[in-house]
Length: 162
Image (cartoon, rainbow, N blue to C red; front, side, top):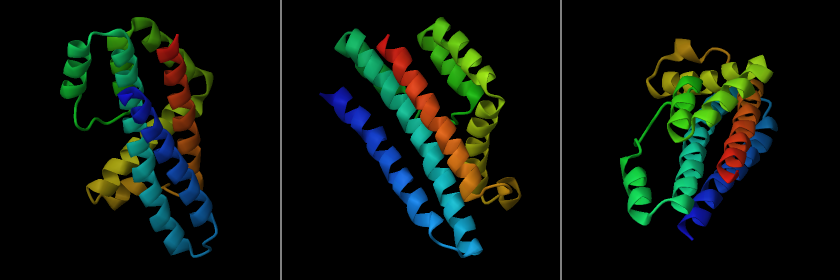
């Protein structure tokens, strides 16, 4: 039951982000759009972090004894930059084949790696007040990154169901 609520958590997060993209696209004020894009960049990065965590914890809870599942859940880092290198490391710790498949998935579209790493970099720049690191943050660029992140979440979801 807990794993179902976790899965619904990132699905609800995704729905909220999608709704905000649609809402913000209606605003023609460029300054407001720039601020909204930065807010969405933070949300998309958070969605990536939460979805990866939820999917992998769901996977663990289905196949491990409750004590092991609890240990992994309790020792999961509170915050982790989900750039492609860290995602690859995490997937490899669960299953080496997942890591290999992830690297192949990244290579299928050269924008995937850039989109994922950009959303994390933008989030960090925004969070730490480094405006110079947020050039290129537009509703379009964040929507593209969100699309890639959504595809990645589906990729991981499929891996954990095999």
